[in-house]
Length: 254
Image (cartoon, rainbow, N blue to C red):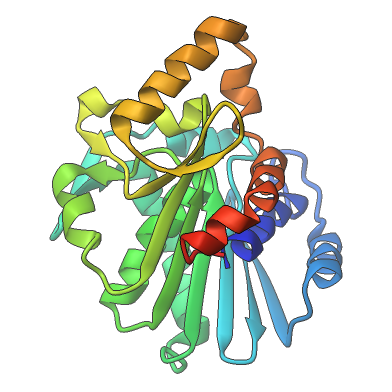
């Protein structure tokens, strides 16, 4: 399931771009159809946001595009926290989540018992985590939430409380991916349970001490600043996850 959601997250970048004023929705539909057979697909641009949902029987996959324009960057930079009942979350990500939830709820409010699998890359990953929580809180049968190269979305209280929700959730971090280091831990932001891809491209269960040591050793041995951004590429994530299929099976996460 992680491989499927990660590939759909990568494909989300093939859609509409408000900055370039290009409408590639039909191209996105074609790319998705080449990857997976579906019963129905809905591609939805909302202001500077884009997500698509595909239906395969009782399964609904929702994928949210990552940062792709200037307005997305403004949302990323809105890192002050807003208070929810479970804790505090990133203001920019919450606003994006609310906009997408309104459209998702309009389409699926009568079909909450379907199996919902939600994911994204980068900015889209952060929004997907808040969306999964909000859908779950409103009675949707959320089964999976997969965050690829995600920034942190909430404070310790929010992460702790929503980690108790009854669905499968995992964040995946590729070594020096700089986006996964933001917003800062010192600002009170935290991650969910994470799978970490080490410098030798092996997938391990996240451990703060181990992963931080691996990051330091990678940077010291290579001293390549480009790795901070190169490790964030969605295509790289998909390739590395494909290499680690055996490990994903062992962890029951394939």
